[in-house]
Image 1 (cartoon, rainbow, N blue to C red):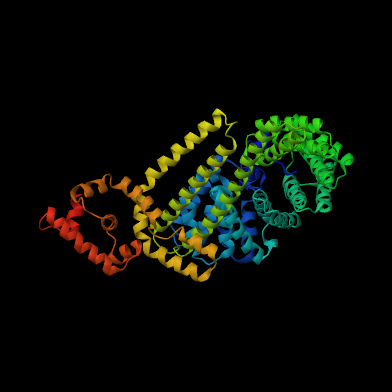
Image 2: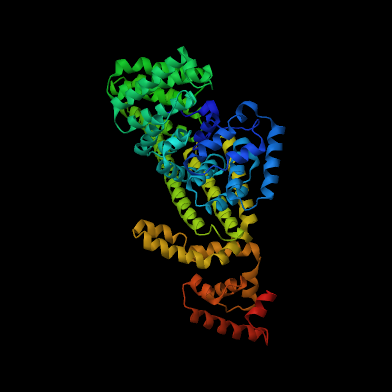
Length: 591
């Protein structure tokens, strides 16, 4: 079974994968190297540049000192001031800062550096920037996209040139597993295992990779392969316990070793259950259950109890099955994170069918409703993540076309990214609200309210920037849509493109709400002064208020430029009726 880390790390969806970063070989590095030595090491180009840079960082992990690190960064940045055009050096200094103290690097600062780095046409260096953005700064829905882009580049160059590429495979595999793409999750887990070096890389990452491979094989119905991976994991844990010196210097605590022994037994037990080898499976499952309860991994405990209950159900021991399913339900209530939804879904399904067999129709109907809510929650979450990934790809293509443009283009990208992130947070909250309608506790309710407040604040704070961005990017978005329509001709892609088209009815309502935040009571004032004004004329006035040219106003409304001129002419007559010797511009300046 793939560990959920419920009580171990107190995480939620995708954050589970981020918690893996606690175990990544981050080189929080750099002290005995002088500034001159760092600069010299960073001059290296070509396929060896990544290894050279990592060697330059190498002693940081052993000699890290806050004062020395701050001093080294200050010296590097002072040197950069006198070499402002050295984009390679700027990128390396940025990566150095991310290695040492990523929290001190602002997202805007990192993206400015990525944009400038792209001008070097050095894909390898750019891939390193993508990795650091994905690992430390990217919103949840963008991590998979940028890690895949980095891996695509690094695989083309050659995996031997990237010491820690196995970790990218691990993170990507974990994300894909939790959106139920088991085939691709397995693919990347196997790549990670192939590139793993136990003498150098952290043993816990090896455990994660084997677990992902085993769990993916199990979900794909390849039970012998799943058992093979879990047996490898079992032998790895045993060997590590006996000979820790054969592995990397970084040691795993006994706490995790004991937890993983139980999880490994559970993985073996589940595969045996699917093969209907119940007698062999039960001791493994009970070992997993004892470990989960001991370490308060409630989500894992619920999942194991589901399997034990299902064994009793299939052998017609319905009262025993019912008791085990009820115990699983109790543990599921304590495990209140996204990764536990799958176990809770299995519990609700088990209770439904067991109560049905026992002729308790009221209880069966109650848990059937719970099952349907949980099923919808899982499906909606998966759809939301895939939609976010699609939006991320569209945003990236748009950003690529803007690499050499002014800073406002970077600001626009940041705004779109932040809005997308907030949308995902709200979607996740709504999904959780549906699923926990009866069990929702005060803590989750307060969190939902807080997130809604943050979203409302962000909408108000960015309203004016959205409105300005709308006017600046009208022409470019139209061009982008046309290009994408030529490149992707399927009905699904066209549907996605319509989501970013300009001023549909829904877009108009969104635009109007944003406009109202920047120019309060504008529409009410206009209607009060010109009672017979039409909706089309209101749209024209609002777009004119943004100083948009005639052609872009026409495109925004889906009409011809001539029609816009006619709108202007009709409006001028209405304005002159209430404000003699005035035109549209004069009217707008006074409203």
